Length: 242
Length: 207
Image (cartoon, rainbow over all chains, first blue to last red; front, side, top):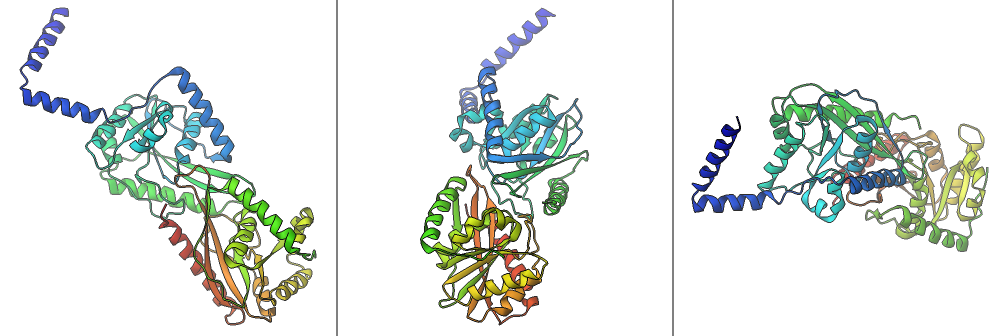
């Protein structure tokens, strides 16, 4: 068995040596491109500090975070699809993950944001650069993360910040690639977050969660399902007894 | 009812205080361009999403519309904050005969073109995501009693965070016409149309 492994590795080495110089340049160029993706980092000490910092800063900024209960399958990872209205929604959903979903939090964040806030990668953020080749690498990385049932990947399909008052949620195609790559390994969870003041000095964030077990053949089907959840959540938001 | 005993010097001091307070709690206050009609008092109708809009309306009244701010407050709340009468607060008891005296008092204030009265026609705190503004009959009763020229303005304040850590307030102001030149149904229609317009403007807001 050992000799088989050994021969395989030798063969692969020879195969590598047979690469032409042009191929090598291409490979080097490709590796340079792939290194642009900033991945989440593990450091037990920093992770813990960031964990308590995020919880503290969310508690300080908001009067409270309200959320509904949702049952999830522990044997599957979670792909969380949410609306993007602020820098805060990622942090609010971090707290929701920690409190309710009990999974390892990962979030796809635009590259410039991760660059600006270096500590985000210790809170589970990995980068995506829109309108570049790296986007494929980021999406595939997100799909690979979903192989582990302990993981949760948060995606904002809107791709950029929109007002909290939007009626129609725009969907970029990327999320569908993740779903295709990680098919059968994850469970889909919709989240829509709204901000409201009620009678308090600080605002209250309300997160509406819904598990979705359907398989969508295209992005339009997924968008329609999310839109339905978003609209019904928005309607509930106006029916609060204040 | 509690009548206002507005003092301009105390009001100026109070405005400085709330400007500091708003600055601490909001990233920015964006007032959409609006020109009040010269020589007209202003009746400002606000969407009541929080108690923050009373501070915000004071700021808008002085900085943008340049009128003396008065606030119509529910009597129960007014009892807790009686000191606010020195900056222009007066009270109203809802659903009672005494409300007539408050409405007459507000109309008298609006006879003076230097004044602005802020009121929340919804009568209670409603969601910021509300798409329909319910206007109580008292609003029109007040408008009917105004004798001087008075412009009715709808103030729709919407809160968004976008990139900032602190919330940003967006104040959308709309001219609903001059008192006495529209019916109650027309007023309701205009306020709701403008509310929809404000929501649309907010969705397309550059940030």
